[in-house]
Length: 100
Image (tube, rainbow, N blue to C red; front, side):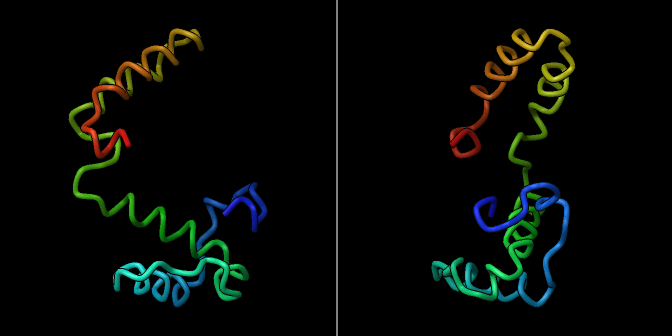
């Protein structure tokens, strides 16, 4: 995504709905979509839009409901070094699929 788009705002802007649906169908049919197709390169936002939708639709968020308060406490630490240490500690508590 970053290689083919303008990075500033690329994850905020939405792709064309029909392109997002086409890409979703390719993934849903167990094919490996060719992200080098002109349709996706011309609308790179459809790739980031589908990625955001995937994370939004997970039954349990990537950073899990169970660890939400721990993550919130970690990012609230003022000292950057201590904050990073605490975030890494909480990340290690994620279920293996989430951690990967």
